[in-house]
Length: 311
Length: 275
Image (cartoon, rainbow over all chains, first blue to last red; front, side):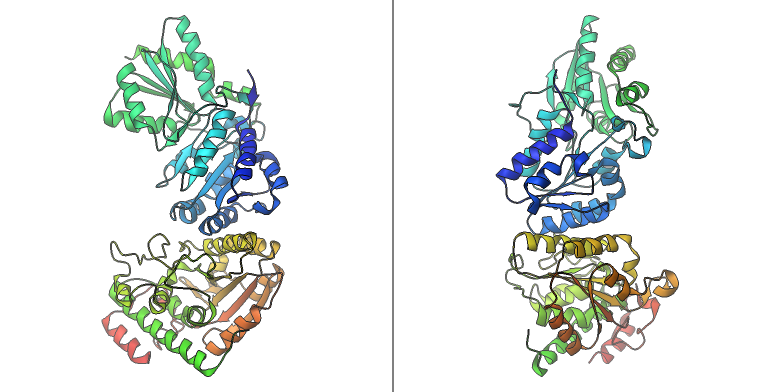
């Protein structure tokens, strides 16, 4: 299976959109080589602004540019975007309902060797709490390209969570994706695995192991954490009676929390959350870290077995 | 070079006085808000809205308009008073300040009120927003100018200096920032709480053209605005010496009037002086 990091797909998609739409402006904070906005900067230098190492001003300038009619893609690492510049995103961008897409790369523990200071495990929780903020976590390159196109067309603020690590492609380029509509990748009656980001592909692998044991699970790619596809969550809760959420994020405040909020209110069924327990990351290779923090195919399969036991 | 004559000066001064009266009246009606810093900014804001800026209240979103960002958003009453006097909305609306459902929020909300260019109030963010607007103007090869006002206490926010570095780096000569240098912040004198001095030297070191003016002398403000328009290749900071609570003797230079609204009696006393 071919691999591509979602940040790579983001960089390519920006080029496509930049050619098609003249009102797109890209901002970065001295990380353009890592966030993959550098290619856009090279081809469209008049529509690229480097804020330097100054994330607060990155978001503030983005607000001003959007207020003057631009569609702004503002990039830096997730920990600096959602964390350091949280209040600028809240007050200058979201409160004013401006057309700024905060595209944060290097999210989660798969940042790897840089360690816990740079591994954002709480960014989805932070961004999800802002009124009106759209939050999207694409699973692979093809879906990232689709999401970017849809976000361009969708007015208002958004947070796009992207990764550093090359991950297997699960979609073709002809994928049709809608913001706010989860994708049912697999149908199974025993339980539903709802995942986002790089964990979707692992959920698919886990479903194969489980099928070998006679356990048939549904797999949903819940790329949009907010607005959450409540209808789909409720339907899968009713159809399968048990849900496991999987995400490369803290189990506090992310996809797992969002799903629990809906399930507990509209269709209470057992839900287990697989994600990073309440702790920071550390240095290591991405694969070692995924194993260490339990974000593995085996762990997903084990969690489903546990889930079925409590039914 | 815009013409400065007695008639122009007189018109600005009349509007500034009307704005100060609105400020005191609407704050009394609201029962809370920031009186001192609204009054200290009034003469400058009047110069911008009634002499300097190329704007059209009939078309608040006209894309070639000049823009004003009140980065010290707590002085919202001065902005609302200017917009009402300029005809963006009726003067009666000023009495809804800070009331439930009013477009005149405690701090400016651009979604709710025509003429408000930026949602500000969280200090440091408005100047950054103004830099973004000025960048857009350059990108689109537009002639519009972007004006902003920061408080002197606001200069304690690190983000102001991130924005200042960017404005000079990108040679934004379509950006002009007033510093309302009234010397007071909530907890006391700026020099005692956390001194941002020397302010002129700081902006100069950041690559700005720096000018100073008496922020209550309309003719002088008009002159400095005229010379600022000739500056090329860098942004302009105008450090304006002002008096917090200007125009009301019992408020002037008194820190307790930073975030206090006048009661009925104080309002009458203030209006008796603002003539």
